[in-house]
Amino acid sequence: MSYNRYGISPENALSRAIELQGIDKSDAALSTLHEVLSSRRKSNWSPTYEKIMITYIDLCLTLNKPREAKDGLHQYRNLTQTQAPGSLENVIKYLVEQSEMRCKEAKEKIESEEAETKADVPNMENDLDASGDDVPTLDLDSNNMLLLSTMTADPAQNQKESMLLLPKIKFLWETYRAVLDILKSNSNLEALYHATTIRALEFCGAYKRRSEFRRLCDLVRTHLQNLQKYGGIAAMARVTDGGKPNNKIRGWEGWTTESIELQLQIRFKQLEIASTLHLYTEGFKTVEDIFNILQISHSRRKVAGGSGAPKAKIMATYYEKLTTLFWVSDNHLFHAFAWYKYYTLCKEFNRGMTAEQKSLQASAVLLSALCIPSVPASATSDDGSSKIKSTEQDNFDREKTGRMATLLGFHTRNPTREALLSEIRAKHVMDDVPDYLRELYTVLEQDSNPLNLVEKAKPLLDRLRSEAGSDGEGALSAYVQPLINVLLLKLMHSLSASYHNISLDHIKNLTSGLEVPFAQVEKAI
Image 1 (tube, helix red, strand yellow):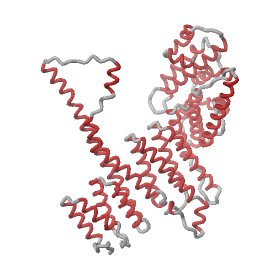
Image 2: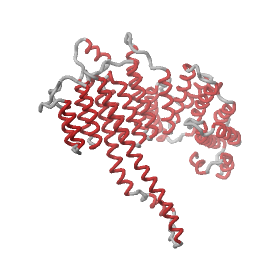
Image 3: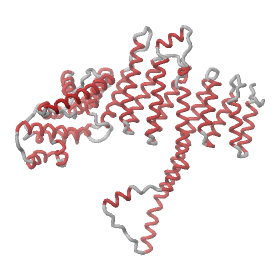
Image 4: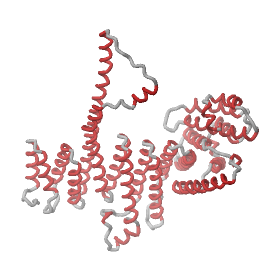
């Protein structure tokens, strides 16, 4: 039996804390348990310590003391990391689950009170109508309505959120950070690190915590960099030969196939949440993280007995996430290349792929490629200085695009619309595409008569809009509007090559079949 410096055993300390809690002296109970956890005289773990930690967590949640919870968790880690890692896992799961539950309860309480408040408003209006009194009305113009819309925040609602929800959100966020810091290099609890990170990412998405999402991405990126620097193959070989591991990776046993896949799954979730929160910079940083993880896998394959390449299913999931990220960020070029990589992986390794799925994915590849804007070289200015500036900008864009293509694992460092369409033709992707989409491809790529360009494309676009529908995240109907923009761009280039002068009325007549506002046509001009 172990004792603290005051000679109180863990069992007696737990009983004393429960008694203090029963007489509303939770702060004293918390201090008593913290004294036991931080005592330097404790030597051997026992199940009583787990009960102490559970009670300690409940007190921290009740008193809303995230700093004390973090300190107690670190003390318990020092006691159980080698003696009882299973107990540490149970305590961490309990802390995370209870923190999430209390945060969810606070949010539901605020939402229910808000719904009751809104329900009372119609009743007040009905009472005023029934009284027969004249109720003055406001005649507000659009400017006043816009000003009024910025002042509709309910002070009482904001006060409720500040008192009830925000403390729970802060406690939960600090819990995630403390847990990830404890588990960052623990190979035995690597699955728990993965699950906690996924929960933290989902928390950022559910509560729209953009700032916390950036900090979380930086945190897990730092963990990955430390594992790369101090836990690589060469570093772990020195440890095997008798060297000491770096303190930043205490408990790390080296990279395995499972650890690489778990790290990839975390980054896939980051891509998903980055798309949801429209944080595209974080999404592109995550792409670089994934590239670094894939480099670790590549290095291990060079070592005898090392892990193999990541599974095709994992890489297919990666490119599927990228299609969403690049679509919402309006990067049509990489969106199309991501679709092409996803399609080729599914076609090669997914033997259960049906003809309908193959046709849908092939159609998405073709349509996404056609959506990439293309400007002919003849459309550039003849001014020499403009050409110099254009060349400098082109070199910068080409270098940036080439780097991104390398990170994404594309087959070329210079991805272009023409290169992708050429690849689509060479790999016979259009064999799986419906006939009307092949006709649309012919209209956009081969026809050059501006007088009947819109007339030929309109029924095909209408069919795409009607047959694709709007269900599902990757519905093909989403490509209709970008295709119209590409069609307008091609129309303007064809007209400029055929005519020296043309009236706006004539352009209106040519584009009237598309049923788009003329302002959109002017943008193409």
